[in-house]
Image (tube, rainbow, N blue to C red; front, side):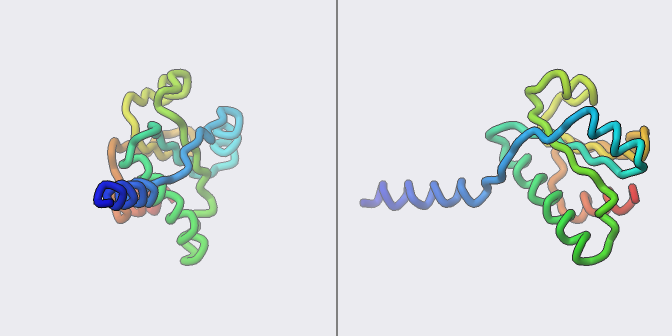
Length: 129
């Protein structure tokens, strides 16, 4: 009985950190967003990476809160990709999961590896607007 209880606790603990991770990056859409003057955010992830899930949650929250707080996060286009996709990883010279890139126009203005702190990510997003 004790083992079942521990298993259920572990199941909920891992499930609570679950975020749908899928590659949304598309080179054509990326180039279009840049040409339209949007701020472009690109994040990398890996299947069993909990810090990647945390970073994705912060980015999703930023998108929602920006709409609520009128922070103009609506001019930001978000993309993500699995870091094991070498074609995309090489395009951005990304070698690690949880790499966060922000582009303003054609210029990369921010790069971090492993950043999951909400305040620091929001600060980087606001500075790019």
